[in-house]
Image (cartoon, rainbow over all chains, first blue to last red; front, side):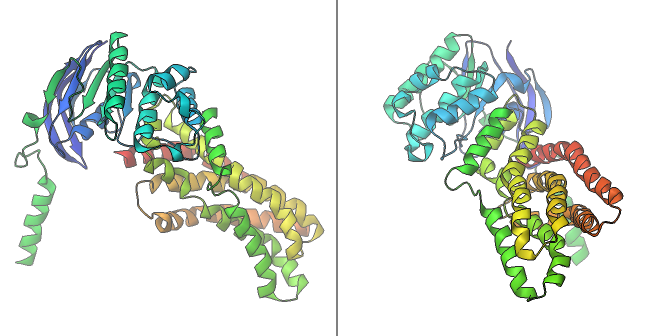
Length: 215
Length: 218
């Protein structure tokens, strides 16, 4: 199974942000998604995860094979580390959370409420969730935010282990994780605001009509 | 899906979860109304089923915006939408959790608080039964409203405006069935309509709510 994206156009609020995207991600591969802030990396990842429909083009994999990790970790502050993780494991039909706790160095924090975790510890718990989903394709949106150097290494190790086990990861990040990876820059695919399908076609018509009405 | 129900119940019962808010509001209404109406226990007894129903409905309304908003803010809703659970199932479990923490306690408390309203003897049974049948509809309709307004900051006002008209059939037939039951009149029709509204809501609204969430997450 391979993630193949062909001629994909993704939109935010009905306005295309990236047009004609194409890349592939085979099992065992890691792709680093690069691009400046606001270039549409998150929109692309949300589209691949099935949270919003693509405007055009095709995605070869169903969203059921994809585990998505967003900026927000989806943690409940009143629940403990174990309860949070066990919930996501149960939702995904897996049971083993011990390995994930150990992999993200959370074993000593297991009974602490998530409210009392530091930002980096919360992030680690959010990433541990990926390990319990049991899904092969990881889509990670800025996974290393608020992680210290040791935790980044821990995270890189977890991704390495996942990839070595036949998984794959698409990571939007600005830092070098020190792993072998292809780089995919979204810059060249930025939607041209002046194309007919581009942004504001409706707004332009509306503006023209509005101007006409005023005159 | 059971895991989701267990988590939601656990969250509600833990500190800051908001359990008891609706119940406290309900108690306040039933304590205050007799003061407002004055010492006319026959009048109070006549309006008691209606007041209990209105109180339960408003208490139910209080906690609606929490159903999806917290999950939306901390990112859980995105992750639940990408999880293997069908979103319709997620919505149903959310509504069920809301009913267990709001509708069910209100139903159990209504006969208790009815004493404050000099509810007639037969009323204890009828208020309990009509609330038991009607409150699932309140939770389900409310969950639908919460799904419609999930992305909005301070969407509580809009949520109330959306949901209140949809609550009216349940209120109307719930209170009317209770009244008829107490007066010994024929209640079969209104009871059937009340149950029909609940059954219809539970059958249809999970799909509508799931569709609303899908659109709001885009």
